[in-house]
Length: 220
Image (cartoon, rainbow, N blue to C red):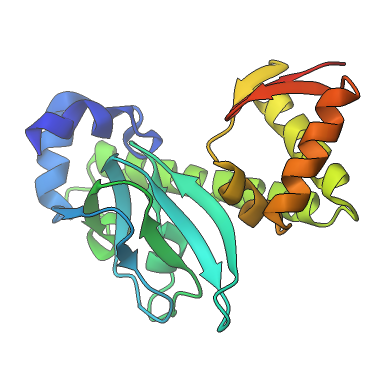
């Protein structure tokens, strides 16, 4: 776990917690480290989550799949980011999503009961992680609301423009990288990859944007 302390400290979940406090907390919260090969499931639909996941290395995709195998990507998490927190905070609830290793992944799991139940000494750093967790859940809820806005657009172009506009505003720049491959972006916006690629080419030829792989430049 020592090699990942910089990643853990950089996580918003542990924001404001000193290195000394962090060492004590990792023991208090009954954390465990697990490694997963690429394309394996960390969690599956129908599972219950008793721990909050934190990516230490690699990246995971949070996906929904129907019985025919059609995939909808809800979000992506990389080093320092959490997954399954909302489900862990709702005891007994069954996951209606799966968490898939996009790359080889090392993840840390925190016992949610130890997170939410303040220790007898009511230490300040424990109270802080609870506040940080609430902030993370709120942020994820806002991002999910953005995704619904993108998906609610009527055409592939409108969905792309909604997504790119939100990313540019969030990052404060017309030039940025997105975290998705073409297929992943299609799955995220719930469109066909061929139609998405065609629309991107049209938008580039019309001078609306330029791109190379996952790097985009909006021309406004």
